[in-house]
Image (cartoon, rainbow over all chains, first blue to last red):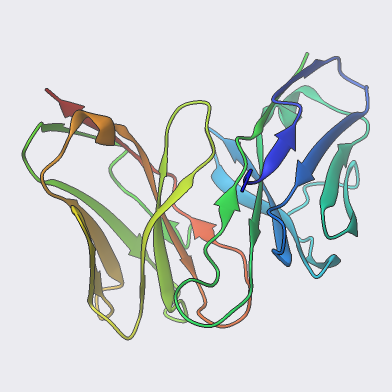
Length: 117
Length: 113
């Protein structure tokens, strides 16, 4: 299995530009999570989907952030317009709902390092 | 308000000795706890987990202990190896339902040869 795939790995953009981060979850997983990692706040949840439906987006910092999951194998996180304070590493993770301790183990992609100048 | 706290930002241990990483949580409703390991430029990878019905779970060199009354868990690595050098994140969640993980800020472990 290829694991969770995120693209791009690195993104450098200028303030005001639109940024789109992409994620392909592990095939068969039915939950997808977007996290952001910063030095100050650590790893924090932005939004998560169950069966392609957004469940909780309370972690999305502002209306400039939006996320979609048009199908079970693809999700995007968009920032428009981007600001320097959005600079962080963005992680996507997926998991499979099921019984026992194997459930709720989230598998992470390698992340996208975003720099907004 | 941090619900999961890792109060030691860093830890150095000699190769072959025990590494003990600590984690405290405030929400008594959490009933499922995980440890993740993260190398630079990679995503966190799952290491070991424990549910609140147990107080210990072991997997090879890694053991997680849970003290529900103290709302405290710890990860023991014995013996520590240089390849264990990484950032370790403690996370808490709920056993039922596919819910997000609440992470601590991590502890950077350095194992010195």
